Image 1 (cartoon, each protein chain N blue to C red):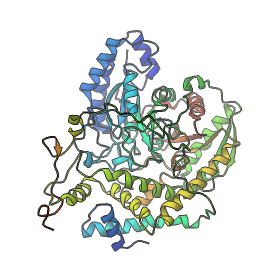
Image 2 (spheres, rainbow over the protein chains, first blue to last red; image 1 turned 120 degrees about the horizontal axis):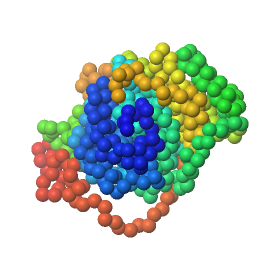
Image 3 (cartoon, chains in turn red, blue; image 1 turned 90 degrees about the horizontal axis):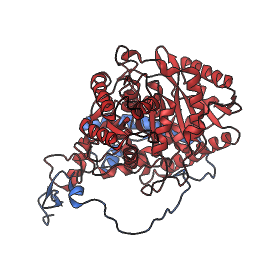
Image 4 (cartoon, rainbow over the protein chains, first blue to last red; image 1 turned 90 degrees about the vertical axis):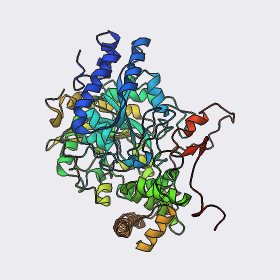
Length: 490
Length: 100
């Protein structure tokens, strides 16, 4: 049995485990070998938890892998802002140097309960602030399709690890596009569920009204299997939604006839590269051939999404990141003269520049004299952005468009120009502001680099996204392509 | 717009410090970012209410009962400096307490 993840998915691996063609121990050993080889190129992992993974795999084998436990023995990677008991968790920041959590995030414990094997922690932009994974204290991750290009961010490590065939699926988090944009840049599927669908307990907070944990995988169905396991209310997260989680796999019946799809004209504007527009038009033709009806609509406040988001997310971040003061965990500055000095020097030496910029913007927009003009104004525009979606969803089941304005850019190209970098998120941010579920599914290559089709649905309608993404995947079969930089690798 | 003195003031509120060169670079970047934020001036929000969260949930209650959670040893495990089961920090004032 092969553990070549370009040829396997969770279902085929599960079948092999149940039929005893392989064992969890063997699968984990093969996965760790592959990570060791491929990660030299992608640098997708901050920490590979080899010993812990081997123990979990042995436990899964001992317990016995039965047909009803789809994730038992399946190796999965976790973004490094999700805490893992006993395994280094840094959020890619110097300020969390040496931090070993003493409990698990809810998603971590739910994966462990399912018998999944947690193989390691993936690289990201520091505290999930960024769109390229260049803002990592541990150095950049490289795109599996072109090692000179960024993998996107902030879940760039999770995306590159999946795209390079290091793991079959990975968890990410998405505050303004941090799952969907890297999924698009790496030619894989990635879903940000409805805000509140997945517990944030144990997710290191960035923008608490926007953050949501989700899944990245090569195959749509694999994300559905993982989300099924991690979704649902959690008493430790008061913002987790008290609604039952539907059977996602049952919804994936391949039939999208009569589905009403909207394309916002603002998502095909002049800021979007011609090649991307062409790929999206072709994707929309595919959806029409599958039986969906497609109309152009307007989301008129789209162009205000980026400033709205940066004010709200940064304000929430400036509050959330107050806890990093050098007292209870992580890095503490040396040779300090008093307690105030511990706080100021620890934070000044421990945070990277992008995190400082956002803390500064957030502190400014919440400060006396500026609150009404900045933070509160943004909160009102956020309401208008949500209203735009509500109006469209009165008549449509799904909104589609490009995930990003361009394919992956070169490492170093935008990192010193924050505003240009921020504009890259214009098409993904609105879904976070509105709290709706959204995903990116591969829509082809432009000049050799992948492009993503974004699918946005009504609150709680992840099943609609899975159904359409699965039908689209079956029609286009992008997953059969191996990333250029990984050819010759297994 | 935002000037260098305002950036220095905000840095103080955020418990961050910058060198002169860093402050110059940050002021320029903050100017660009706030110019981007000022695009919201164009939006007529009328009587729209601010939206701070999207769940529409409020006052989620649970029973107020004690639970065994983490041990003192676990809670202190990540502390950078500790002594005798306590977190150790420098004095609040430069030359020790009481000499202000």
